[in-house]
Image 1 (cartoon, rainbow, N blue to C red):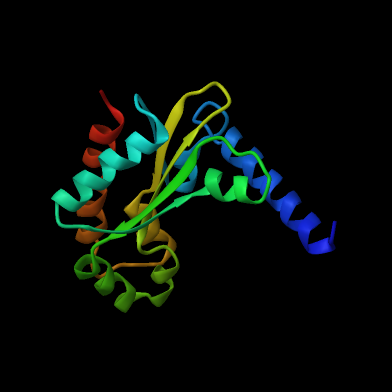
Image 2: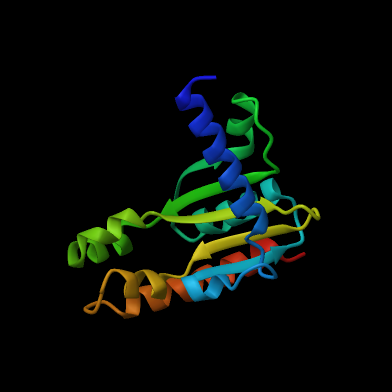
Length: 160
């Protein structure tokens, strides 16, 4: 095994351990600005439902990343783990204009994963945390508005 392959395998294993351990019972995600909700649906269905709500409400879904599928291509195991990348340039661009570093966190992402017990979780960064992280002051109403909408969409996507 080459050094690069060994390093990638170690990184993948570390990432798997972090995602598996990152359930609300294992850590306090709210302390890091992460909103986590338990889902009554599979990983795929949870993000399908979220994507539909986002597009129905005028947001753009840019892409979905299936980390488990990518891990399998590298002969590694990872329980279902997917990330949905979405946003609204009319809302996000003014935030980036105020603080260009905001672009590292935009577009917004939602993570759905299955833990070791088979429970499915949905998580996303709270926009107010992003606002604080990047020192956004001029447009405080935007993160608050986005946060409220995301909470509604995430709750509906994860509930029966």
